[in-house]
Length: 168
Image (cartoon, rainbow, N blue to C red; front, side, top):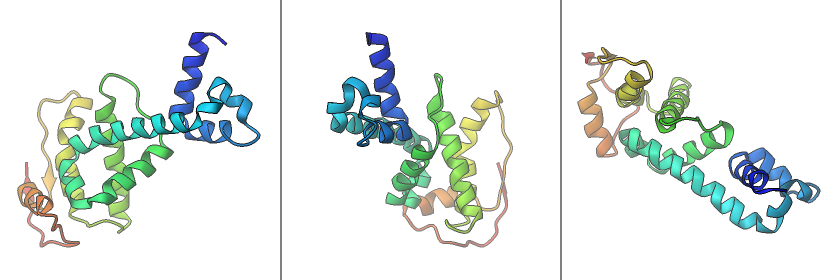
């Protein structure tokens, strides 16, 4: 196996969780090839790649991270395990938008505080503008984003807030 094939196998073992699990299983050792004895290092590298993605998403969704606390990282790790990492130069923005959509689904299902939906909408607006190549955006929020940000920074976002529409 040449260098290119080894690099390709290493990358696949690091980013494809299903391939990694079958490659390092008892009857899948030949699939992992030269990396079979390096299982611990490959798994550590895979976790570091997910942590790097998590750091980029935390930068984009910082107030959401403040609201959710340790749940944010747990939810993102579940998200990363079940989705493919976006490709391209600005993949961190696409990753943040996809994760925000996953969180929005959880909010709609009643698993997370409802006001978090406005906060997510506010935080993802710059990334959405970038993906849609827009210079301006107009959003109607049920709650003023500034107030939500203050509550988020204090870690006190309640499940319900009085309706105070705000157009930004």
